[in-house]
Length: 433
Image: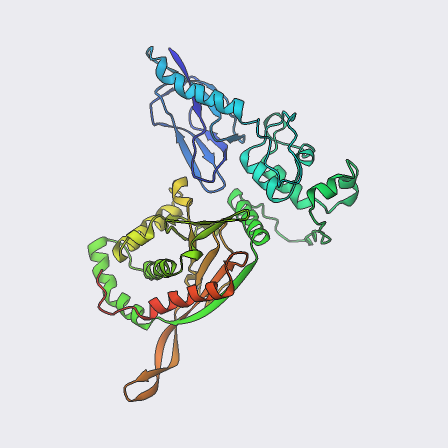
């Protein structure tokens, strides 16, 4: 029998680690290739990890609740046969990864050299957060870790960042030289404790709500948000959709919503203004080739999740409608894969579905723009006719475009949302599905 290491797989371009939620198999159980062995959670989604080999689960290396970096071994599988060459490859790769990972302790902002003698392991996610916060290696060494063997987890570093600088005495005690090295301004605003009265109910945040809260705080800290508003006349779209929805239902078996029409207009606007389809990496701008549209979906729990339509510019209205329906249904059933939640380059959020006329959405990092779609409302409006101006009842909605003012100026941010409105207003009543 050969022993093969089951490793934590890569589950998205930005996912560096995952938390073991529960094992579906126990030590000694027989497992088939591609059979789900355990459930893990990333900062994007909960998912199951299949076995890469058939055999017997000989040893579980990662316990429930443990945070494991991508590429690390999580179990040992005893396989049948004597094909020692095949299982040896992944085993060697894992060993290589383990040996190489601790070498680059962390990438600093260039102000100081990393401590080459440090033997403490830091995940790429922790190192990136430390880099963004200007935390040098010497200071990172003092951060208490709650992970395996004292490893600093994402929660540890974020907890440290949230209190960093708010307690001057303890920070100054270790070394007076720490302050000029980090260059991080001290925040003077302490956290205001909540007031609790008799009869109040205390509700513990679930894991997803904690992640959403942290992401929103991170986004507002990273990107200076500016929002531009435009009102669009979507009367033609309303009439067209009312006329076509029954035909679409019979032919495709799903509902025809306004969302695919909005996505199509956004894609066209991005093609006209490709510098809104970018990301920021330090002092570099990455202009994305693909147009991947994230669509915010409200879950039954009240939380929000953002599945991504990859290469949305290559789909027609029917394709977009079917994709939106499929992702929305599987999002609410918690059946999305990590890949379907990553890679977005621009996001839309339909606040109109909650009866809101407009909103100021928060950008999904590392994107630089997000569009909120308000409720469609009947309004009296002045329209031009061959015989002169007239007042008529029109269907109108507000579009709210929030953008990262580091790299998107008001002119570009305003022109993008105006162009989306133009495409919506020019929608033809004879458009085919």
